[in-house]
Amino acid sequence: MTEIAIGRVLSGEREMTRETVMERAARAARGLAGLGVGAGDAIGVVLRNDFPFFEASYAAQRLGAYSVPVNWHGKAPEIAYVLKDCGAKAVVTHVDLLPQVAPAMPPGVPLFVVPTPPEISRAYGIAADACRVPEGARRWDEWLEDFAPLPEAPAGGISSMIYTSGTTGHPKGVRRVMGEGAGPAMAQLARVVMGITPGRVIRTVITGPLYHSAPNFFGLYAVRDGGLAILQPRFEAEDLLRLIERYRITHLHMVPTMFVRLLRLPEAVKRRYDLSSLEWVVHAAAPCPVEVKRKMIEWWGPVIVEYYGATETGAVTFHTAAEALAKPGTVGRPLPGGIVRIYDAEGRLLPPGEAGEIYLWLDGWPDFTYHGLDDKRREIARDGLVSV
Image 1: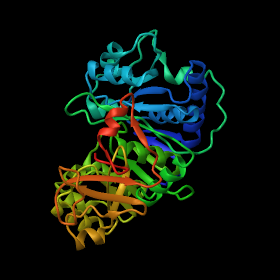
Image 2: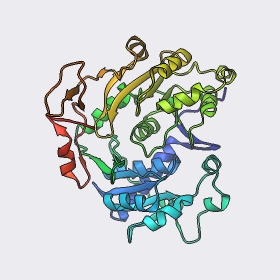
Image 3: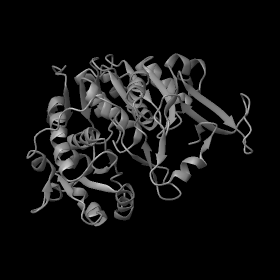
Image 4: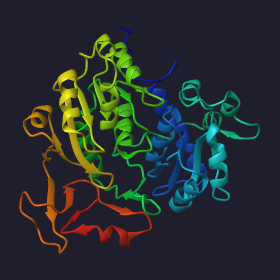
């Protein structure tokens, strides 16, 4: 087993201390403030899972601004829509993504470029030439070094503006209203659902892309408040088992597709690794087939928990492995303060056992608007709940 140092973020062979990540974020915050970025503004982040993703996100938090993670799989017109719609005051991207990002840039907006690191290059088969920063580009790492750190802001809720619901049209930016109670509400959800408590040493692998809502929430809290975070460039089933054993991983956030790929590994491979360090494996984002859930619990033990919610609402229901086995297919009971109601097409409240449209909310969770689309927020609201 590898000797485990805490307060670290690892990616491939690279390593950075949490203190360095936060210092660089503070330097970036000072620099972004000098560019006119302030409270309520947006910073576009078109990055894979890499150290600068955290630096830019925490920099935005210090300024009261929103980090806007952009799906880097998108084509230039899709990226352009998000950057224009959110009013990005600056954009940070990996260099190999420049062919999609450069044509998408709003006029006059500063673009910062990050070299694509070797582990990401290998994971996605990116040519070496495409990973080098071109002459004249503004390098993120060099630029931020020119600034003194902006003084520490109080540790509050971390809110990225996630764009969602784009299957039938343009996606909408979920802009949370970060009032006084937002920080405690988010910290409570991180603790109760994600298993992340400040001061408690957790060791995790961040398996999903950070532009998605749940990995974004989990990852930003795990790096800020946890002990060890390993960035997996892209999900690989056996590689995850290797990392769990080597670094004695305690916490994971996963989706059912990852369970399916893990279960497809040969039995000899599954038995090869010691997974006894696992304490908390939380999953969501899609229905988990009953048989898949049962097999994962049999293999990994009663450490697997599940929640149900949405980008707009956060997690609203939750259940343990024991509850999953007792009631196969459940997505759990409402969390304290959670409300779930089912309505029919005419808006009538339905009793238990009836099928209809799900509306939900979690008391204390910060309210939201769809950026620039207040009417869309009202369209999904009923009796203080929302349907997502």
